[in-house]
Length: 247
Image (tube, rainbow, N blue to C red; front, side, top):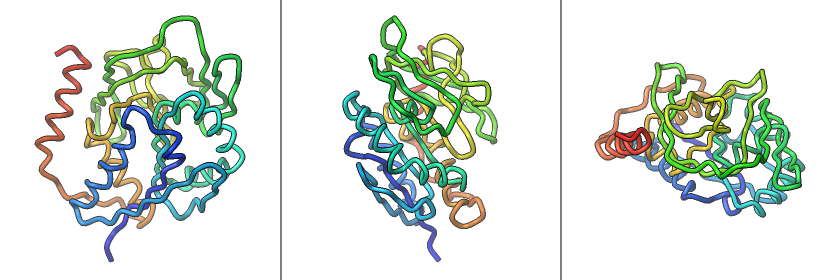
């Protein structure tokens, strides 16, 4: 039996800025290069889905007008299914606007958008400039401390509640709010982050980690992924880190 990664893109037409759709393409290529099948599905406005049919959920970021529409629709049509998938150990990667919508609410101007309530966080608007620039964070996903590099551009400030665990610690950049030194959030196999760029081509090791988690959910055992010739990927990671850290 050939293993297959089953990925569901949430609102791919509405939530796709800063080339973040490249994360999905990168996952597909790394599966194909290893002989792992890749099944892509999408769920847009008004569409529900079977939480047991997909092992990897992806939610990108969007413009303000799109995020307003997506927030209401997602709570109405997909909240229960997304929660069931996360509780069932599906991988959920949410970037920027998607990250903001994981929490209780997101303040956009004078409007407060409903969140999924999957993690204990809230995003607010505060006086001050947008948080923009290259960023590097230090993370430990169970195999030792590693560095993630990317690009952030967000006006919202995200604050984690006492029950939320950050994805990592900021080495350079602003992170969630420019104050507490945290970036992103993680819970079970859920990761939320402000890192754009797109994230996964700059950090191939994270893509492989998420692929393995998704396959473990489907097949009951975490696979040891075959090594790839990652000369270009490692070079991209070094460059991204050097740029972020000023090396």
